[in-house]
Image 1 (cartoon, rainbow, N blue to C red):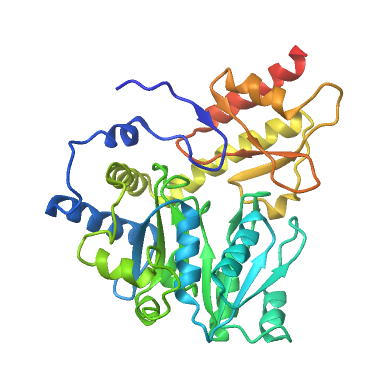
Image 2 (image 1 turned 30 degrees about the vertical axis):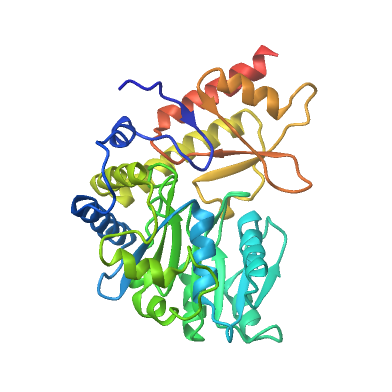
Length: 365
């Protein structure tokens, strides 16, 4: 199988290796067969390894669906009727979590702030201790790809743990792209999906976290098909509770093999090298990053769209796409931006190719 390679600069689905693509092509198999059950067990085991989790106390629950399915599963299942959720909204995906809570009738308060702002641990502590509380759970996005902003991880977890508040972290676009080491970090749950820094295919998401807290959530039940405790009970037998995306799971198994072979620290270093090449090139071409550098994730960067005559994102996008490079539009209300992600099976040379193509576009007009 020879598939033309494309440089995807969107934050997932990301560029994949040929071996991950080939892993999709397997003999037809019933997902109730023992062979597939062993594959599922291996995927769950490898996810815990990538997460630096403790298999004795933590588990990886696979969910058929996009990352938003993992969000909805966690929010609907973990927060009881007697609980209250604090949602940190400093981007579109924090906003989405608040919308999920509202749709499900989960008791929640949304802590809104400008989407170019990162809250600090002392501010989170004030929220948890303030008049809007008390809270039993907190949800935040680690890498907010609306802007490329990196929120705190373990620091927020420590604030929550000190108050016996359960922490739920959307790590969709950081898991496997930077070290998280859950066994050593006071975070209760992380959510992610196969098709971002894991470099797999879309269709499987997962919740990694406390076995005890998932078991305790069994009676919450706001959702039937996304009930987290139901998934965990079924997956313990090697089976999804409902029809799984069989071929995508095979591809995820291969992507995990490649992640463990590369190691997360080395992958994080490769992504950082890609970011360095990209940012230096874009700054040389006088593009302005949306955020100050200390807030950058190093995995995605938002840039202001230039106001120079004749420049439009659409023209740049089409110029690059004709050269097998995909650029991503902005998502920040009221500000004209575009985004460049540097995750997936990319190298610094790919980002140098991107910068050269942007320069060609600028001088060709």
